[in-house]
Image (cartoon, rainbow over all chains, first blue to last red; front, side, top):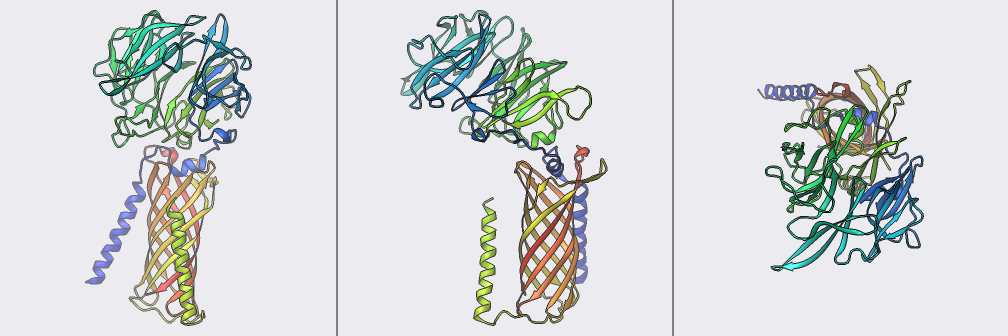
Length: 398
Length: 200
């Protein structure tokens, strides 16, 4: 009898193993073994000094990229590694570059960077057209408060400032938005406003400027007359905004995407992890290449109401068709990366921004992460074909 | 990763304690294996290396290079004898290998093996084969697959209670990706470990 029970147990175990063999369970599209086998090095041209950095911005001036990674770094298009850039004070590398933007000023692309000393005191906003010679912009700005960030859209530079004060024993920030008129910063119509959150991004839809500011959306046809916009139904916790042609797409810290077609808003469903935890989305990025229309949104681990959201890396959408409420993210092999490249690069990483640059000869997307450095993906000739076929080369570490 | 140094530490303690015990009681000397009996057991703690041999791609089809480097392997095994020649063994094992981007692939093969024991004086050759499951993890991704395990252990009996062993096993793990069949691979790995084995 014992032998019979023993034999049954063994047979049960064998049956269970055979079941597993034929119905392997997984939470990955790439497959772990196929990923290991096909993995290509993502670190061949890596700059070790920024491997674990948290970049605050990346911009492109001509054929040179500039990044705020503590201080200001730069890299030309054909270079492999990043170097510390020349800054307004000597020696280089001794001041922080907190935000930056490139706009066209009177026909010349100009880089604007907000610098501060290591003590935290502001060094002001500086501009350069060649990366070497810096000019301070509106030295008296801001007259009150402190500079929070620089934003740009439609070749117009905006500056966000803040002051803080106790309101009913609660420390409250009052935000102001200014735009650069070519000589100095003038008000954009938002002054010492505590009802909005920190203005975090701006986009231009060919007729109006749009800002995300916490639980508010601001808009204005003129940069000097911003006001609160009509919001999506139940919209809140806005993370960032981008323009898709004449449409506007806004992401939220609660996992939503909102689309505005000039008439009405369309809300997506909540983008969430497999454990049904909503992603905190970064500022979206939209670009068109050939016939492809791509929307990228990073997912980050920035805590919200004491809850740390999961990080997936980023979400990729094909906007060749119109935005709908049930829009689906791409999975597996996508336009930007294979499932294997994604799994061995940005999968599971907190991504704060994904700026796209088209410098003519080179088209590149960067991914700015939380503590995992700077990554890039270049639109280049497919090495696997004899003809000239441009494809995304996959994510590599900068 | 916290478990890796802990495992090494525990293994070192086990080996050290055993060596000290040997010094205090009887000198380390071989003794002949007597025939096994039904109910005998061998509990083994093993440390060594796992070598990725490559992957079979059923889509191409063909063999693909491992594209990874050998790593650390460990196992806890128990073999219970059914009669004088045959035993049934269960293994809880684990191992790490490194990918080209220095990510760590962790594998935990859990298997059940049939052992045929051939005593040769102070030695026992114990070829075995079995089935199991292999839990693989790389970064945030995890996968559970079937496992075919085959190989042999070579025991040297150091005392009446203890043996040392060299183990060489091959693990064949079919990783079937039903949603993305182009990513289906059969992984082949070799474990080479040294064991301290207690006779129970």
